[in-house]
Length: 445
Image (cartoon, rainbow, N blue to C red; front, side, top):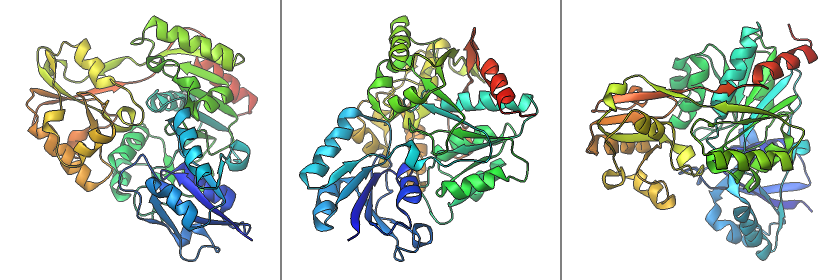
């Protein structure tokens, strides 16, 4: 008898776990995925074209709220938890729901889900959403390109649209972002890569993606895994760089699967040391020492700059920050807030009285966001609501703290200034030394 399975997910790790562990295995019957964290991703199907020969009708994607009911109605044997950046308490609460409904609760690990590449792989991961993986990935790529190597980045999945069309996506120019109908969250991750001249892949089927990346038309010497949330890599790394955030000291050992990344790390980057408290930095150092004493620790900062500081000084500013960092990342401030305080804003305008449409629901689900505005743009309606909220807000200036220029994709009828930030290493050891050894060890030229 086939074992009935539910994969508990959020349109990312769940699909990968299915593809690598369950697809084409006749002893299992995946009856449903469930969806959480991301709005409007349930009510779809994982399509037959991706699901394989055992699922000619595809696999339904249902709301996680219905999990207990699904288990009972479908006689489910096993539920596989497959998303990231959640407290340990959240994981075990779901385990309780699953067990009370009669099913087993499972977690799949790296040996069952990591794919081996024919190229050397560097994985950049983190202990929470918003630690600074993206700028760390960019720094790694810059170092390797400076050594004459061709680096192809592969980003953790964000397939919120047509899953068949998103099976394998290649981004080499900004125009590719339009071609693939990217959400704001996707553009925030892909655009900083392509404007620097390197190719980035993403999608749904990560073995198919890897094989295309290894044979990219521009050449490929190294695969750079650019992680999402605090998930561990989909590819087997030859070097793991884990980024931690002293603004959320202690989270590195209390969120799943962030502690997995801390334990797997060859290198740990303590980011944001320029804006974090000494107490937070010390807590993080001690947790690294206790959890992974063999890891190389690189001290880092994320110094910011803005293109029009005169629009901040003495002005009433609405601050727009990266969406996931504020929502399931639970950060209270981001680059925009730091810029407002550094350059002398007279007021950080509260966005909440001006919220429109789906943004009201976002604040209901995440009531601790505070007065900043998350750049939610998972769909056309959210973009319209974001645009209307910004234009409704009584402020002098809009500070854009997101990795992309929002004014390029929505019509902001107010003065705007953008915030920029990159990783800056402090002292030694540094990533340059780590990567020079990596290149030598792998005989890369």
